[in-house]
Length: 582
Image (tube, rainbow, N blue to C red; front, top):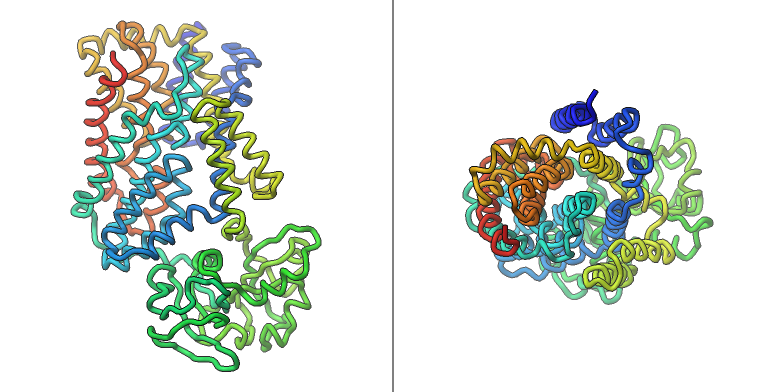
C-alpha cells in the first residue's frame, strides 16, 4: 500500500479512537506508534526519540514541581489567607477567581482547582451564594490562566515541543501572554458579571463524599486563633470545622458559644472532613498532642505515612479509650482523628473505640505495616497532608526554575529537571511520590504523537492533505482560515483530549498556511489558544472536579461555556493577526 494512503488511514482511525475513547488515549497512541513501526513508515530511532525529548522531560518535571508546591501547602495557604482576610465576601470570591487564574498560569490548572475547591465553597457560603454559582467559575478561571505562559497547561508545552519537528521555532515562555492575558481578563469579567445570571442555584454536594472525623487539636503559641472568638476564627465558615468542645486545663466545655475566646494551650475538639482537619493543622497553628509526642521518637525508616484504618471485631481496643489501650505505645503511631457513623459530640480522648470506627493514623511506614490483624488499612492519605515548614524552599526552587527558563538563562527543561533533582535531594518529595505525580497517559500520548508528526511529514502525507485543504479554504482568506481552524480545534477538544486535538490540527494548519503563502505563526497561536480553552462540556479535568460537588448538568456547561468560548474566539481573532501578522 502507498505510504501516504496508509498513514492517512492510520490518521483517520486514530482520530476516531481519540474521539470515542473506545481505548484510553495513551493506549491508542501506543497502538498508533506500533503500527508506524510495523509498517516501516518510521525508523525505531525516530519513533522513540519523543520519549527522550525535552518536551516530555519538561512536562514530567512540572507535574512533580506542582506536587511539591501542594505538599508544602503553598497554594492552599494563599487561598486560606485570602479567605480569612475577606471583609466583603462577594468581592473576595471574585478576588479568589483572579488569584486562581494567576496561579494556574504557572501550575497545573487541575491541581489549582482541586486545592481551591473547598476554599471557594467556604467563601460562597459566607457570601450567601449557592456553591453551584461559584464552582464552575472556579474551574473556568483556572483554564483561562493556563494560556498566559508556556507552562500554564500541558497543551502549550506539547505544541511548543512539536513545532521543531514541523520546522518552526518553539513558543517563547511569555509569547502566548499577548493574547492569553486579554482573554483571561475578558473571561474573568464574564465570570464575574454574566455567568452568575446563567448558572443554576443548587445545594452543593461538596461535603457528602467527605468522611467526617473528630479530632483534638491544641492551640500552639503564635497561632492566629489566640485571642479570637470562635466566630472570629472562621473555623466553621472558612475551614469547614465544627468545634464541639474545648478543654482548658482540667475543665471541658461542651458546645461552646460563638463568643468563646480561644487561648493558647486550649484543646479544641473539632469535627470535619479529613482534608479540612489536615489543612487546619498546617495553617492555623494547632497540633495533635499524640502526633507531637510521636515526633519525639524518630521513625525507624524516616518514611512517615498517613492512613485510614478501620477497627475490626476482636480488636483489643474495643470498649477502651485510645489512652487506656496505650495505642501509641502499643503500635508506635499516633491517631490524629476518629470517624464514627453515629457520631457522639465529645472529646476524642474520651471516646471508647467501637467496631467499625475509622482511625486517621500517622506514623512510620514499618509501624503502619505492622498494625496487626484487628486494624485494616483502608487507604493511604499521605499525599493529602502538607508541611508548611518546607514552603520557603519549595517556592524558591519553583520560582528559580521558572525564572531561569523564562529569561533564557538556561533551557526550561534544564531548569525544571534541576529543580526536581534538588527537591529529591532535600526530601521535599519522595521518589515514589514524584513518580506518582507524573500523569503518565499524557507523557505517553505526547511522545507517541511527536513520532506520528515525524512520520506525517516524512511520508509526504502532510503535503497531500494540506494541498487538498488549501483548495477548499483559500476563498476564506487569512481571517477566515484562522477562524475555521480555531473552531475546528474547539470542536475536537470536546470529544478528545486537548493535547491530542492540538497535535492533530498542528501539521494541517502549518501545511495549509505554507501552501497559501501565509506565515504559519498566527495559525499555530490560534490552535494553541483554542485547544487550551475548553469550556463547552465538563470533559476537561478541571470541570470534572466541580461537576459533582456543584450538582451541575451537562447543559449547564453548554449554556455558560458557550458564551465564554465565543468571547475567547472574538478576542483571539482581534489580537492574533495584530501581534503575529499573516
